[in-house]
Image (tube, rainbow over all chains, first blue to last red; front, side, top):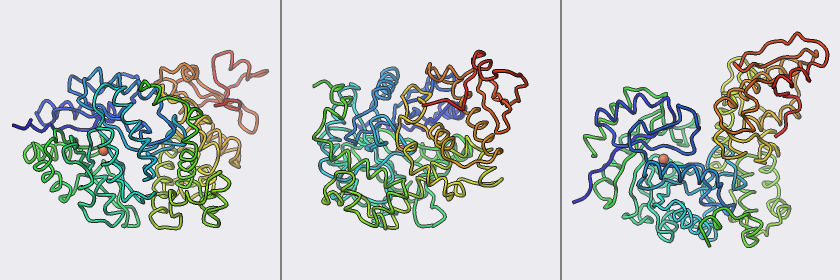
Length: 266
Length: 232
Ligand SMILES: [Fe+2]
C-alpha cells in the first residue's frame, strides 16, 4: 500500500510560527518546508517541534560557475538536523558568479552542455548532502537555448543525475500560460516516478493582464487544485504536497485551504 | 573527485567551461541591463565579439526584442525596486515622490543606470550577507555604494540616502553573527552637505551631533562607522 500523503506549508520566517504551530496542532499539516539559508536570530528556527523539509532557492545547481560553499554547508546542516527526507533545490543559475544572487533565480539556458553541467552538479550535491535531491523549476517567461523546453531539461537532468523532482504547479502553470502552451505541456518529459512532492500556490497577472507570476499571497485557482488532485491519483511516488502561502496573507485563507487539502488530497 | 572538489572548484580550473560561463554572464546581463539590450539589438555580433563569443552562441541568448523577454526584464526590475523601496523609503519619497510605489521606482532613469552598473553586477561590490553566505545576496548595500558615487543629489536627497542606509546597516548588523557586519552595531555617522555631523544610533534614530573639533575621529573612537568612506 502506498504511504499516506503528507501535507506541509512553506516557512519563510518567524512571523508564520503561530499559524503553522496552530495548523500542526489541528492536524492540518505534517511538516513545514523551510527555505535555507536562514538567519541566526531567535525568529529563525523553523522547527517548533514540527518535522522540517529543507529547501533552497539560493544554490546555482544549473550553472557552470559552481556553487557557494557557505550555502551548501548551511543547507546540509539543516537537512541533517531535521533528517529531511530529501532536499529541494532549484534547477537554476543565481548570478554571474558562484557566490551571487541578483534578486531572483535565473532559469537555465536550455543547452545540452549546460544540462551536462547540471547533471554533474546535482550528482555531486546529492553525494555531498548524503540524501536525495529533489529538483524544481522556476516560472518561465521565455525559453532560451535549443532544447525543446525547461520540462525536457528537467526531465533529462533528473534522469541522468538520478534525482527526485518537486513539481511546482504554480510555476508550471505560469510557464505554460506565459509561453502559450497547453496546461499540461511537457509533463510527459518527466519520469512520473521521480516526482515526490508538489508545490501549490496562487498566481496573478501583472498590469498587462498577459503574464503570470507566482503569488504567495493568493490561493491556487480551481484549475491548479484539479491538477494537484489528478497528479495525487496518478503519480506513483508522490509523498508530499506543500502549500506556499506567505505570512502576510489572510490567516482565514490559510486554514481554509489546508482544511480543503486535507479533506480532498491526503 | 570528491563532491566538494566538483562543487566548489574555482572556475579558473575549468577552462573548458569558459564559453558557457561567458554566455551565461551575458544572458544574465541581458535580463537586467538596458544598455546591453540596446547594444545587442543594434548588433548581436558586436556584443558577442566583445564578450569573446562566436556568433553561433546567439542561439543560447534571449530574443531581446520579444515581448516575453521584455516581460521577464520588467518583472525583475520590479522585484529589485521592491527590495530597495523597503529600505530606502525616505530617499525614494524625496527623489521619486511621496507615495511612490515599486513600479514608479522601476521606471526611473537612475534606476536603469544602477541596474546597468558594475556595482549591481559585481557581487564583490557589496557588504557580506547577514546569514554568513558572503557578498552578493542583497542589493541594498550595492545601491548605496552606487548612489553615493553616481546619483546626483541635493542636500535633502543625500541626507535621505545616508539615513536610510545607516538604519539598514545598524539593523542588519544587530541580527547578524558575521563579524564584518557586527562592527556596525553601535551606529554610524555621516556629514550633511552643510557640514553638520549626523549620527544613526544603535537604536536606528538619527540625531545631529553637537560636538566640535575632529568630529569624525571622536565618533570613530566611539565605535561608530563613517558612511562617507565605508567600502565593500
Ligand atoms: Fe515552489
